[in-house]
Image 1: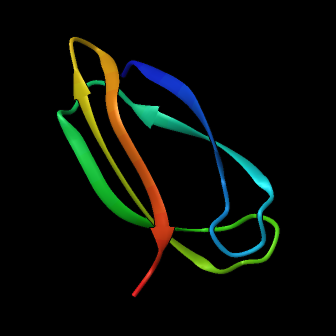
Image 2: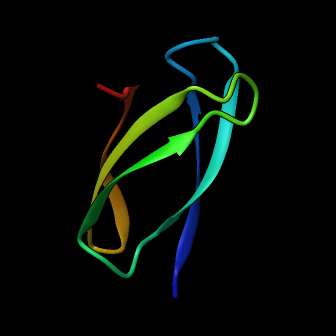
Length: 61
C-alpha cells in the first residue's frame, strides 16, 4: 500500500492534524475524529497518478 502524509486544519478547534492517505485507491470518504478535540471530521479525497488530486476536511453532519 502506497501512502502519503496529509496535513490539514481541524474545522472545529483549528489545530493542525496529520494523517496518512492511501494512494492505492481512487479516493475515499470517511469520518475521522480530531486527535485534539475529538470532534468528527468528514475526510474526502481523490487520487490521480498516485498523488492526492483533491482533499477536503469538513465538519461532519
